[in-house]
Length: 318
Image (cartoon, rainbow, N blue to C red; front, top):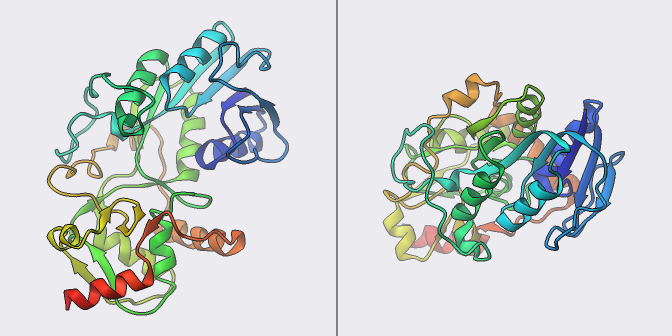
């Protein structure tokens, strides 16, 4: 197949380009080239989708187009400028499209309304809704959750892998019974390509079924032959001591405040698993993430606590 990746230079889109190449597709990656380099042995076309006509350097027809954009204006231009040249369209969307993240166990339902300034990063969910509306029901809408694994630049999973390589008690957020969900970037890329090649359309929540945070941390630690003492801090303590959820400085990843985000990592994704999404063991993702951290020299800095911050919080916790 001739496959166009709108992106292809960073994390998920780069993995999709890599796997497309390995399947024998003729792969074209179209991007500004500012986030990184595409995989070897694929065609790279430098474009600027922020301008009308920005995709003019992309020529010919494509069996598959896969877009990871979050700005509706970029998606709108792509749909218009590639009209009549695309067999199947995939948009990588997000679980952030849902209006109510507080209800756990929900399956696919109507997303939130599109009422936002797309340039505001806080409006990520509404912007993705607008992107979905632009590509329409004839596209595959892969509503991804937390994507993890090698080459992840955001450190929300890698923080825990890195932390379990060091000794000492480990501060863990919330309760071990809290639910979490994630998907390895390689599994997501494989499913997106499989689904696109089969012509699958419509929305799918592309993430594993929920499981407990205690199981997650235990499996990561076990894969690294670590036996840490997990010291659980409830969210009242974390909020009082200004520990941020999810990512960023002074944060603990894989934690979101309850009850307002009780459903964000607790969705029923059985339909997507039935449609072929395969989820590899957490231990495999952890080991491969650690190997990437060591080989690349990537410093975990976009999420988590520093050693000093963790020691201070553990001391206060008693």
